[in-house]
Length: 247
Image (tube, rainbow, N blue to C red; front, side, top):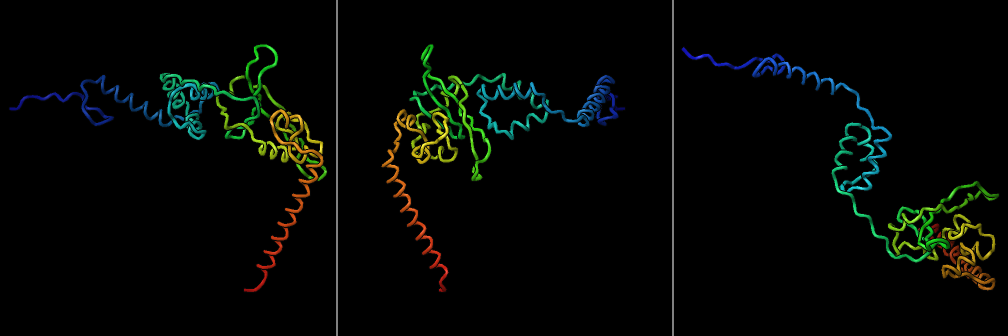
């Protein structure tokens, strides 16, 4: 007669054998916890969690492609946010970028942010930066949008992300002035005929080594531009006549 084989206690939950009734109860408890977790609504991260997560993403050597879409996905689940925060805290801090030697002047980053870099007159005579804030103020009598510009002090922090290649050129300063009708260097409205034409004022032109026309030079320049415009109009008209002829 074969000997008796003890298979343990059969579980009604998983249909398997456990070592004891205590293990069976644990199996039921874990199953209930899983069901409850699956049924529980997903809770988004708190404002404090979001602020701390974003702070750590900027401070730690994580190597993640931390796009805004990626961050929002983490923030949609409080548990995921908490886990990411714990993981980031275990990572080393990122080394701070070293600021390059910059000349005082106007700089523009790849995202279009404009900074004015200068040395403080009083105190320690250190190099700092201000950010240009452009505000739409309305429209003029011709229906053209009008703008106002102010520089907001940012201290040394922006200097680390600026490079000499980002310094604004004379042509870029001109294009800005033609669009916004104020000088990008001092934010004053352009009122003189020469300033309106070149996009910046005489004092800022001198300080930045930009060309600024005399009245005689401006008259000659406008005449040259008028001739060029007439030639272009004639070429367009000739092309239109040619295209209208039957082939």
